[in-house]
Length: 301
Image (cartoon, rainbow, N blue to C red; front, side, top):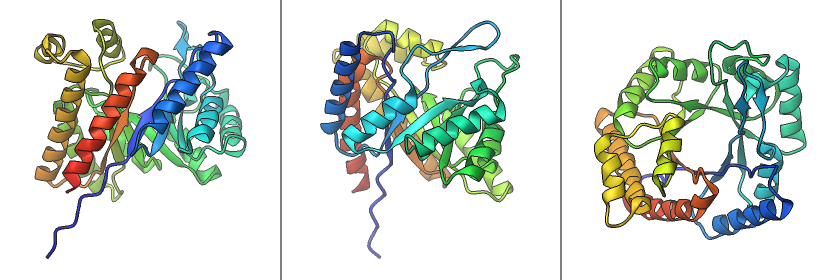
């Protein structure tokens, strides 16, 4: 029997909207640079647009960046790529506030794919619905797809993932990864829990970002990414420079995760979420996407 080629993994390109306090000319220049960068790439399937919010000591949000729906709508029209919009649902004013936001996102901005996110701190009493409830509300109200964030290093993450899947979630994007190790146990446990509950496992998109400087890495670590001291030293000691070294490490993590999934017989479909994180890393993220396009084409042969 002839061996069938492997299916190409779905690829998200995550792009953070610009700071809304920046001059209009600067924001427009950034938009054009992003649109041009995406036009130069093949194999990108979705834009992934996060909502950025700071929280004060009681959990009230402060939005520094352009609205994710507005930015994603404009960029989607310019590139022809569908957009996934991330929303921190706990900041909405109750269930009615969330549904009002959702209706506008779907009806005005034509968003069909969402990543619903909770708050930063469990001790805060947020006004909006919990992620599980927001997922159920969204799917009952509109014909949309809902995803969530997965943090492989967080204790009990597989159980959180299966509960979100039971609520109707169909995919996850991970935090930025520098190692396959934390994800291995989570994927295995997640599939087992899904099978025990009679529900199909959601897709898991591994997030990778290029590292240009130690400041980049420190910020990613502040966001929750973990890297071993050995890999950190290797990034900045590499003759190729930290950007290429971080791309090489990302590809290694991807290949190790695929190999483990195959060996363990896992049915969880894997994809990629590639992110510049910083505006100055846009070019490096484009190179990350190009090299992954070559790698994934080779692995399908």
